[in-house]
Image 1 (cartoon, helix red, strand yellow):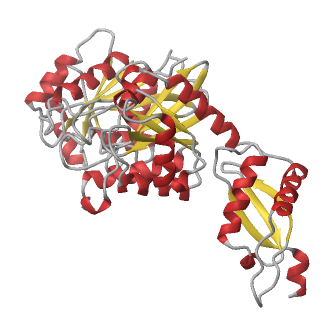
Image 2: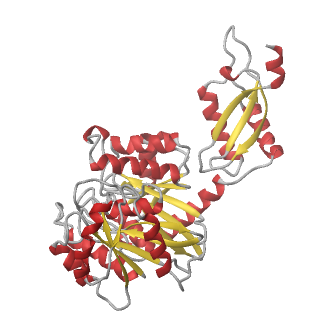
Image 3: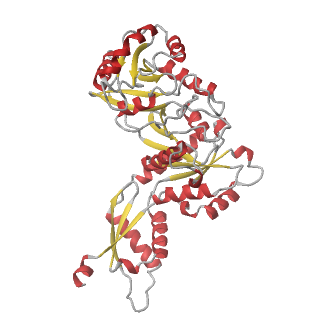
Length: 444
């Protein structure tokens, strides 16, 4: 059963994103003085006193978006309101009632909605004296809070819990798999999320950089729960100022990679692989993340190249992801979405698999019989004794040898590639750790 939804609604710059972060207890939404930073619905599951609900941040109502996305932003706000059981109507106590506040008040005037009026930025007791004027909005006495400083957070949470009475707020099913959807700008990530969710969950536009935040979307699919993380399009770091909104978007995108069980790295079939793609692929590889290279917009490129030719092209330019399978999709039409999802589940299973020590050492014996490490002149002969798996996600193998510094990188790559062939880790990264054998350490 879906969790109750509590949506945060209000005009621009009243502190909606700060309020979501305060209630969630961690930074979820980007907070920036620039109006219109939040465009999509940014959501997270919140636990209060063993009760759970989905908290949703929305864009500022009435914002004049610089990329002409105002209609899309307000469409997302309308969807959030339609799906919510409780609305936190946020106003700025320091500025009083603005014309847009009155418009939001009318928008929310529905008999089925439970609306809590929240007067934010009440950083001191003296500011709370201005609460009286907000009665004119028709939602009773406002709850005065300071999201930034945590003032009166307890009062607000108690009111939310009171309004949740009678709704199913039991612990949600844990997500089976976290999918991070990453790539450069305008490659179709949001179209894929919407196709997967079966609704317009995030804004899709031809304007590059439409998504600015990392957006968690919980999806029920085939009886299982998936957490899909839509991320901002990555661009060259040299083009991002350290205080730029897009700098925050970039850091959220890389954090999403770290959070993910499986990364879907999107490429645009109609564009060449860029330096940005290469850097992102390198980051995914460094984090040892299972990855599917998703070639989107294939319907526009399939007449110019075969899948085999594109495979060769990717292998040449993204060698660090040689283990990653490739999927060709058309997100806007939903083509091959289910097969991509099935493949992601297979990778997640591989990444969480643990093999027995006996099975692993039989594979090690086969590998070392095929090719022994090269001896280094005047240094000594490398020897491999045995190995054991010490962790999953990623599968982590400790290889006990006589002297770790004798095993060069070329042999380590060969060893890992053969482990993929011989063990159920064929399409996921393997972390290989070299350790000196106890006997060798005692003889030193």
